Length: 600
Image (cartoon, rainbow, N blue to C red; front, side, top):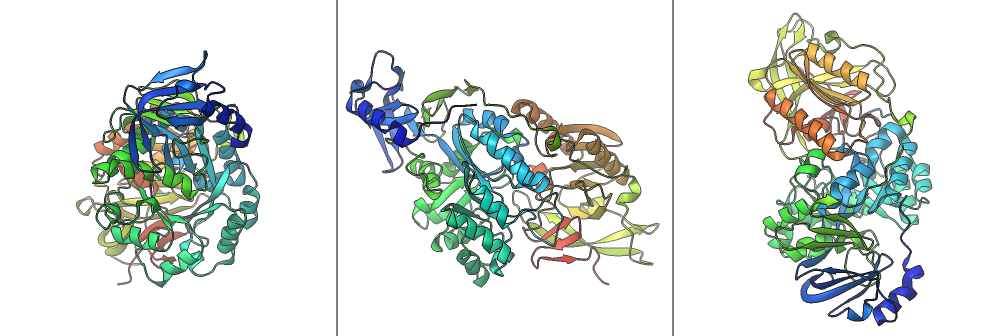
């Protein structure tokens, strides 16, 4: 395990002595361009001195801090930037454990992450959260954990593998690495004054920690104001400029996300670039990034570059990924800037706009150089009871995926979940579908195929069936995944009931993951044995399997960008408009169950 960084009080005398020149620094970075995110300046030919993992001196000449054993890095005019912070994310979406995720993002300059493990909480409960908490503490970068607020995310609309409540939240607030409450997804509960939701928020605020928000509705009327009054301090579900403006006007931080499938920065950052709002109330984040994105495209460096491409001043974009995030979580005196006393998390880069990550330093130690890790993240032994969590209760057959037509009907008008490319919300569609031998059929010409949710926590053998549009699948195929936010049952989408049964049973055999079947043969498999959500294999290996999965989906006709992420959210019953759960079809505009078929 990595040694804990000394606190500022424990290091203060040494930091002062180094800054004064009485004692030598451990490391000095000489001759760089200091990016000061407090003043939004770039200061040429400055030196940075580091002692015991913290910044001691930031000024024009650190020669007085150099001793016989001081390590010197010559920046040669390159930019000296604070390490990047991800203000809202889910480790599990990377399909990786914490240590493997850290290995993947360190070369991209991420040195602080604020993670909400509500995926593993829905499967393993408090034990799963504690495992994530403990693994996070062992990493060479800062991984702060938010206590999940909603398991289930929408009580009465889904059944999860575990449930959490106010007492669990209060207990977690005593753990050393809990930074606050994870996103409060049950926004109708807050709006309606649900005692359980308000008690969780109260327990967090009593601990002087930050309450994460999740207001996934376009309604900015009284319901939005009621949610803001309920205490959430931020929100990442905005999709347009009006959303961003509304949030910051109510004293919330607007978190703008660029994940693998969410492209919500460009449509909101105009609140700063065109409307001129104070940028210190805006934060960049990823929310959900799968392993392929992390390995091939980047992490927070990708988000910052994208914000700059959208017209944001590079220094403002960097503030949104460093000091703004630290301030929001009450850590401005601890991280997020290159200033005395803070954790020595540093990036060296030769260009502010394209942001090549040439060297990464965390807590005063070089941890990545030219895209390669120079230290190992500490692995964690996830126990046996966190594996083998896929419990189907029986061997599934094509009959389990048959959708019976209304009595005597020759055709049926069905409600259809409509996937929206690059966004989390879905559309509530309808389609007139044919009936053969009493069974309602999908329609390839209308881009309507079947979707099923297979219960996998309690071995009930239950299957909920419906229809989905937007994937453009053709031929006899099926895709199954035990990553199904947030209840994390198994989602199966397909054009062939036989292939759907094959895919579901296969995931039961391997203990969880994602697979694609076509014409009765397995075309791709990503094994995720830990809670059916994560792998403890290296990120490049998982990314390679994920790339094969994406290629198999394309071979089945799918043209949707990052279609896997859309697939994994089809059971997310807190984001409008239409979703599926183990209890049936959910109208998320009304937060109530709705029939599959429309009455004639």
